[in-house]
Image 1 (cartoon, one colour):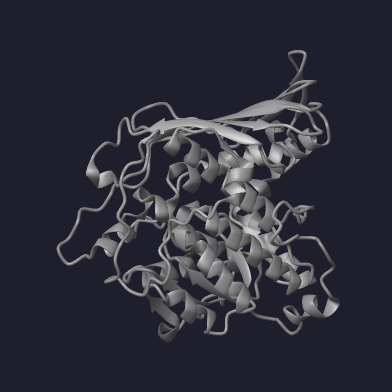
Image 2 (cartoon, rainbow, N blue to C red):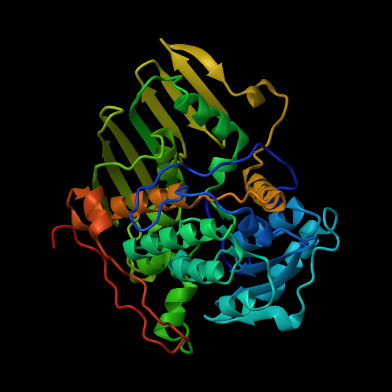
Length: 457
């Protein structure tokens, strides 16, 4: 699955229309001492404070690229009472096109869904603040992920339900901020749904539930891939652009903004590892990576390939998970998962679609859709359906813990590759790694000075 945030790439036909699935719950337990989700009940008053009288749910869109535009349409199709009320983007020129595309997509399913007046369309680095001040009930956060922790924190403090695109941060400091904000959201009865769309895909939910229910026995090894052609082509520098604007317009290619492709895209496949392992953290990670195809300065400083080994210990026994991702045009693509357990093997290809489990070389389970009854992947729509249902029911979903863990696992793999060291989970949690500048206010601000990471340097 590749993102498309180019101004001309709104991909309106890729949007998935309405639907509903079973509820997605809050992950139990805590792994960060700064806040324990599920540590105490949310009061009835807190839950109802954000539901009572909400015949209309006003939606604010922050980030008007392809993914944000798609998410806004899916939100409006999830509930006939939803209205797109405000929109913001870091750069001018995309907001009107995005709102128009959303309106076209929901014209049949929610013809009253667009109520985004010109005075509620905001450009600039502070646009998200103006969206939060515009009277919205729910905010979609879909800007470059380096800004996600700051925007999520502000949204929770403003009392807004949140749809938070993946990844949730690009550095360790950001992950810790997200965890703290997620705990505040729980205490305030605010919904937090993650843009890890596979967690809301019907077939994947059924398959991973089989694994977690013991169909394979204890999981001992896993292999995931995210091998794709690459990000959108970088934009050539214009004389009127500052260094910061140039990096923002080419945000995929700068680690502080995107996290590198292992964090921005391949994190989906790393989340599959987290999911199959029961949402427990790995003990350590060792990785390699580099730039073999994208070697020019126009590609910023990110790598074009990674390979990571995650090691697990503890009461469930030892296990290893292997992940490979690359951005090599004109090469074979692959986005699959193989899970090996004591009793058998599971293979997941969401785009195939193939979802099956074998034991002793024989199929023992296969997802029912493959029989031909239903085709199509509704995961993008499902996550918004579940979000709106939880808000209406006064039982808000909170995905914070597992979405933050999967994000940190991807950052951990990147760190191991960039440094050439085996990196432990304990080390990651002790660290205060911060890539994103604090207090950016405008395009004239200084941009980070970055270079290609050299392992062992």
